Image (cartoon, rainbow, N blue to C red; front, side, top):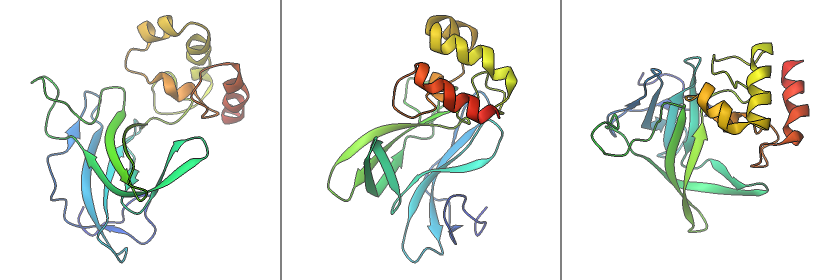
Length: 181
């Protein structure tokens, strides 16, 4: 993996992955904190595999993160809790729903803890693709979230927030239909 292209970073390649043991969840997804080379600066970042097994950038030093709609900040550092499967009572940075929990510090001095979903938005049945088989799960999540949680316990309900407003409601229907077309 060292010297391989780093997804999400134009011209960047992976440097030595020296930080820690990667996180692995029950679905076989992996998340790790690693270094970059080829970017002109010492950049650290978090990468993880989505449900389809594709490696993607979660967040990196020098990148940006939308903290809330319209509030985009420059990241100065990122951190990921790794090395635990969760069974020992210690925290872990990747859960079985494909969500990565991480902390970030920003250029304005603020900091926070964030959760990134690794599944493709709209993939409500967690099979790794967005297609007509997601319609029933989408409708269930919008109209009966408790039933969705029972039927799809490892799926991330936030994958139904297709207009990214933080609400799961009727305003997500048109963006969902657009994904299907």
